[in-house]
Image (tube, rainbow, N blue to C red; front, side, top):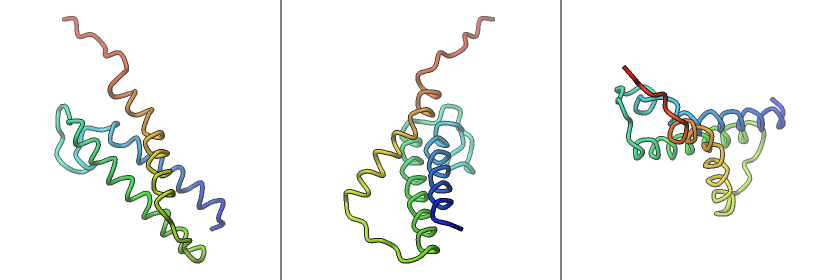
Length: 103
């Protein structure tokens, strides 16, 4: 795998992982289904999926060569990017107009 391919894999994984907490009602994708999953669960899932994305990126980087040392600036930029990537899922879950149930 080339480094360009690894970058695209991590970016696609980050987009999917950032939006998964807002796209389903299951706890951690495999747990019990909750009718309205609370926002706290969604934030916890967002943090966990962010950590898994960092782990996947680190594993891909180590398969290509030596891992570059990261400082706090890298992690601050990652958190900002990950939250930005989660924005479409947040909009879809909380800010779209809900269909009316007129019966």
